[in-house]
Length: 241
Image (cartoon, rainbow, N blue to C red; front, top):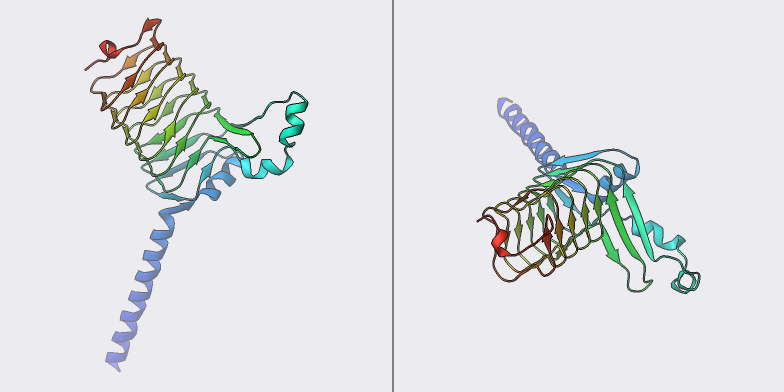
């Protein structure tokens, strides 16, 4: 009888252990659709120490495509093929791994529409890992934006992006070529200890305010043609190494 009670107790403990393990695992994994639903509802989003599954699409393009005019119509009527989403929520991710694409820009070759997203409030991607594409082409960041300590392991672009306030890319790591072509930093840019394992394209880039670059390292080409820092031509001599 005592043995049966002991076995029953052990089974109960084991069951609770499995339940706890499942709950912990569930809490550490977030579906991208859950995040997007919160943003659509106007809520601020903040996540730490989780893995995001599925594409995180700030443009909401899937739900917009069906209601858009065909390419022939917008072209004939002199319309614009850019469809923009204005994100009013504060966005914060710390120590988060994104297993799929993070999309604030997408060009649909079939319809010829370009989908973009701008951010009204602070944007934080600190110590995050982007396993797939990180696309922020044409994005405007109205408030402070931080990507400090993050790793970009696949294609990425900040081409034509506009940073109205401070932009922090310190201690970032780019495994592939990094594109900041035509990017505008209007209140300083921090690239301290940023490491680029490929090339860095900053052609036509404009930086106003403090430019911090101590320890910044570019393995291959640093393209700075027509780039400016506070009105001065930007070249390797400006790097604070």
